[in-house]
Image 1 (cartoon, helix red, strand yellow):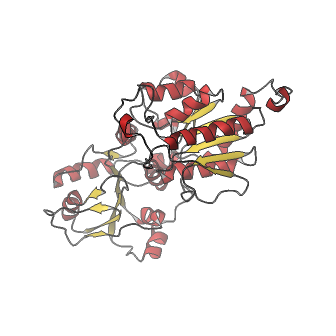
Image 2 (cartoon, rainbow, N blue to C red):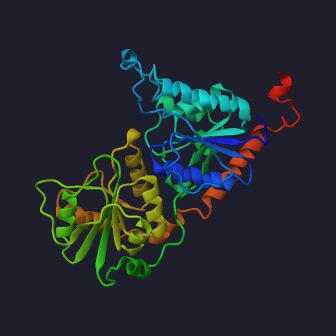
Length: 379
């Protein structure tokens, strides 16, 4: 391992946001040093520079049928989140990464996200950077990864940090607001509506339905749309209907779309959950915005919603409105949002700045080791 060694990056394969973030950072970093990505899938990444190595490993979270059933009920120790016993796929995955540590002599390893792999890197004497997420993450597993990390990478602005994060954590955190999210200049409302064949004169409320869980419930949307007969409510994404709802004529469901940026630009107002990609796209566009967080591990979205509310960037409800008056209160709050403050949260070149930070950090950590013998020479 050396100051000029490569940087490895573990990518959780269950979220495209993780892959998009990793791709943006790797593409910016490859001109500075070699990069190897580790993931259980290779079909979730946007275009990667041909110099980037993508190393497939078994999934660390999904059973294959080869697991030992007698150990399935054994409890997890407090310092891990996902470390079941008797999983050959986990053994193989960890062994593959540990072998790369030996052969590649990396300068740094980034984990996005896995408390266990952060601890593996530390135990293998490899410095690691952990990607920091919103949520109630003061448990022993998260803190073991964060405390043992040489740095933390937050894919959001320092302005959106949680109040309980300690000075020690903040001091070693690089904030990269909007990294991996297409926050480039949005088309104007008129340009977007022409592309989507929408009428310039009508008021449009866009509902961005999340992909997690069972989908966004349609019943609360029927209440909101029926309360505004002169507005056109349009949903994109996965919506779940219920037998008791009575959909009004001004509510329509478009399903999954390939051009969410155009829909966001075309909207007058937006309703959404607060996944990382959705949050940064809406902030970049600047819109009156109602946020209703979805269930996620460690209350990730609820904690993100709280900081958006605290900073006056969104009108937040912890649950879906159950009557028209609740929608009225939310829209009144959303109308007070300063959209220029929303846009100011997004960094200009977050991937480039994060890549430079990782490169500098790597060089600083290994300063003074430039002339030491390699492992092969020692052997």
